[in-house]
Image 1 (cartoon, rainbow, N blue to C red):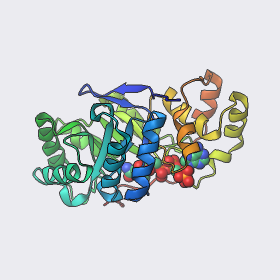
Image 2: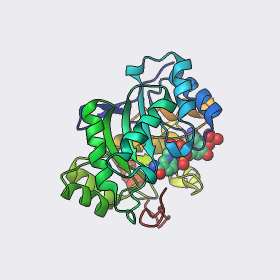
Image 3: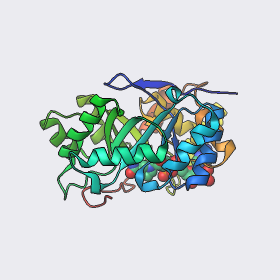
Image 4: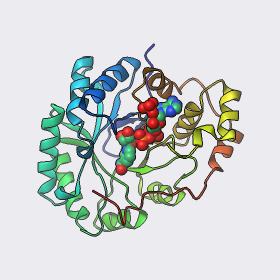
Length: 275
Ligand SMILES: NC(=O)c1ccc[n+]([C@@H]2O[C@H](COP(=O)([O-])OP(=O)(O)OC[C@H]3O[C@@H](n4cnc5c(N)ncnc54)[C@H](OP(=O)(O)O)[C@@H]3O)[C@@H](O)[C@H]2O)c1
């Protein structure tokens, strides 16, 4: 059975599927297999990055699947060495070469690297690539409100900010900035790997109530909260399960339960870490 994810509109007019496939830490072979399998299940959104070293595999999986290019939504991201007005063109050209395609649906600055202080120049360069049609939508990843504000002060607003987000780390501060500026929030590590989220009794109780798995409860919360999520799996059963979150609705009190699960679980600090 093919299931299609609901989509959200981006400011440029592109439609981003709310459930996509994360591909880190797959290698090229794993990514090609997973992407090919995911397409047949109904996935249309694929998240990769220069840093994952698997863009070739993602492109190969898409070609193997036979999916029409216009039906796929490909996100990729670039590293700090390309943080300049001209550097982003070289980053995009190299990514297109590796992916084997002629445009990128969503190009992201992977980490702000505020110590370099060059993301404003980089983003200006990305807008030129967008005007030329090489890139359909432009965004950032791991940006804090202060980084977003610096872009906004230069008249630049990303369409998407991809951040670490799950019910233990709902990231309310950065989401508030997103709402104010019209930025779509995308959740990386949406299943909170390593945190015990999927065995939390509040989640397992909801899984039992709705006849779904814990991962499906969390991903349904993402969808109903207006977020994009990119769960990664290399297992066919889990790939299928993670996309299959369209045939049930969490009621208001259960959404409230999930909204109330914030802990002090750490979030990668993008003022310190980045590549
Ligand atoms: N922008 C950034 O800086 C950044 C950083 C990190 C990640 N990302 C992106 O976000 C994607 C997702 O993040 P992530 O891979 O760290 O975390 P995740 O997708 O939340 O969790 C992945 C882990 O959960 C397991 N899993 C997947 N589906 C499951 C299910 N239905 N039930 C139980 N376990 C399940 C996977 O194992 P199996 O594969 O064995 O199923 C894997 O161990 C990455 O792949 C990458 O594309 C972006």
